[in-house]
Length: 120
Image (tube, rainbow, N blue to C red; front, side, top):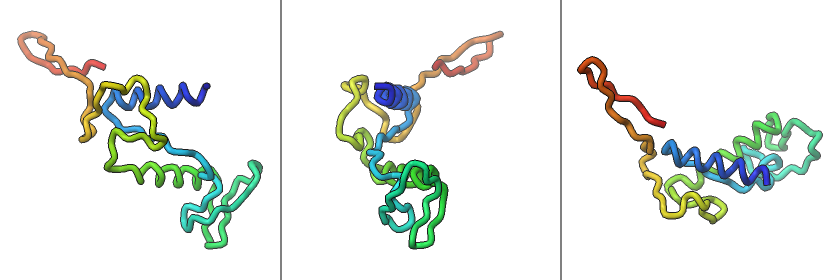
């Protein structure tokens, strides 16, 4: 339940601030080689990804590269979630496809000078 709630908050905050968030399936992200795609089985105690193609990197860095690649594969498909479901808070709401912020700006007048401030 903790990961689901964390993901919901990340997606909501992304929507609120006009940023696109993409949930990607985490399967094999720490075992697949970011350079060649070969799956290298390893235990959790193995902290370095070493591939026969010559790619060597920290396991977490390699996983983050794989996650980034999976996320970038959905570019151009805004409003589509990698797992197929739509979060409950997003039903009936739209996210600008150009990435503009949804924050509103309101003018404030101080000493007859108009100052614009962001309301978050």
